[in-house]
Image (cartoon, rainbow, N blue to C red):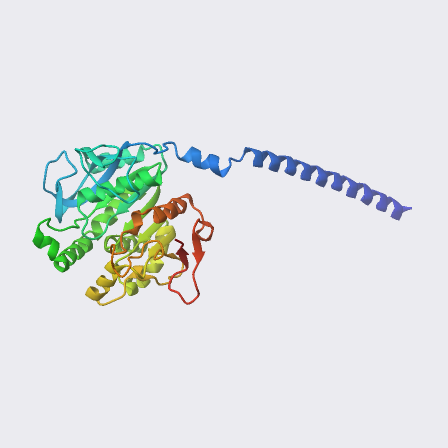
Length: 378
């Protein structure tokens, strides 16, 4: 009799437990259904993120930080306003740039006297102090900031126009900052011919700018924004040692996306600081090309392979873009300026959205014996 009572009580307990469990499952299903119905679709999330469609000619604010020595008028961004030698004190401000809706992707043809819908134009310059500069970035409604660092032989005005083009073509919702170090050459015939001396001078200036860039990055990353850092060519001589230094000092994950385009940086040196670089960012993407004639020339000058010539690095998404930007027999360009072209910007757009490399458009896996992990398809 006692055994039957215990059995009956256990059955009742089991039935109660089953009812409670079923009720819990029912609540969970209701909750999940409500969650799924309330969760925005991807398209809705993107529409919410991009408030400005960038579908017509616009005047954009391009924030600048430059260590170039001021040379020209203080109210203009064009006409050699900043030169090719490092100034001890950085200059801060905003260049107002007209970005034409009809521009070809990657082209930054500028002419203030022509149709504003077909040509880039400068519309003025606003100078600020360092604290005011940071305050303007912090007060932006967007939580994202894109920092662009240009490469070798780029004048200040060209760097600003390029930053404006990238912001417009990426439909980037946040503030864009160009860090312009003293690259470039004299516009005269001698300056154009003496490429080797220009390269050496730019290389020296790039190394001088490592500490100023680290100081700038310290200030920007203290604002609590999501920072995407886009670097091109010799700009890596400025950026990469600075990032490694900040990581060694204990600063970590201060960048969301670190995007390296055709890095003109010693391959072995890159591998030595790679562990520190990986501490600096949530993800590193490296666009490379074995058909990059500028890097081939740099290898001859420096006597060592460059990081942008397609080698695999642990923890880095290495993407070969040779198929989408490869000069035929060296004719038609250096194969070095692909970072501002339609195929690369299409991929960078997805990088900034956080899409995994293997799930992005036009990406395929590379062969096991190749230097890169992935290839951007033509």
